[in-house]
Image 1 (cartoon, rainbow, N blue to C red):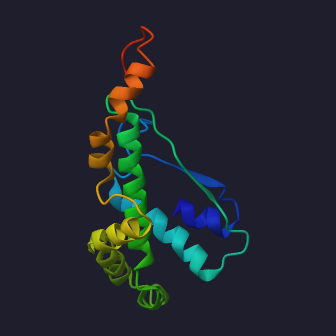
Image 2 (cartoon, one colour; image 1 turned 180 degrees about the vertical axis):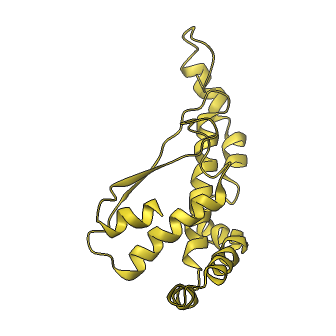
Length: 165
């Protein structure tokens, strides 16, 4: 609702995608509330689809990692954001508009849930392959040994030990 209103009044500047449980936790995007993230993308895709005047938000990942490898968490978040975006792209907008016009909340919800529950993994994997990317980026990252090499090049400075360095 908030995203829709911000779009309507041309006040949407951007998004810092992350997730939270106890305030602004900066958890991996979509880790706790994937449907909510999908609904945000549904509004963003809808605004783009309708050619909403003044629509051009910036998208960012906003996370702070103190338990996980920050690069791996960013990869997880990027994959989650991509999944939500692709799922929003497959919403049957014609049916959704018909149900919205008829004020049929149940069928609107079912139309959205159909897109949300559709497995878009093959679409994402094909897109990664076409761009020369990895189907499983985290596995490739781990196999590369980057974290260990970065630790050698940037040794711990004596801090609390959280994060990659």
